[in-house]
Length: 169
Image 1 (cartoon, rainbow, N blue to C red):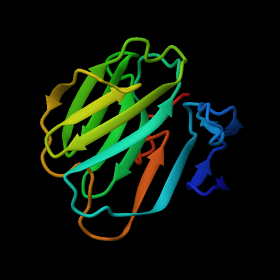
Image 2 (cartoon, rainbow, N blue to C red; image 1 turned 60 degrees about the vertical axis):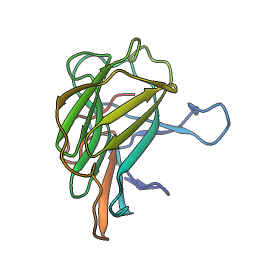
Image 3 (cartoon, one colour; image 1 turned 135 degrees about the vertical axis):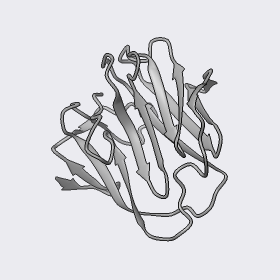
């Protein structure tokens, strides 16, 4: 694995591909869906917060089968997946809750800006700036993945921390 300012790149995800951004802010990384991921382990707790947001750019043509975009583990889990229950479904797991939305053309290979905002009781997904209609599968309880103590925590991009749900795209 190679070190980068973001963290450790494991199993050679393809780095340096043409950026998904048009502003020239850097290159993108693609994941093979088999075993590629990025880990940042020097991240520290945000402290007790009422809300947390995560943003990313995504392009995939993967079909059904749950794949993890982002997973943060502190006192609670916060992770975002695509493909559970269908290729166009985004699922947010936060504070023990599960929230879903269906996004037309989610897996058509075009770049999407995904923003996820979580509170102690709800989650909202925005795709290209548009709030999606959310369905609560199970209610959340507590702050969304936010710890109150200081210490190193893990963030994975491209898979869950338990080494499952590898992302393709």
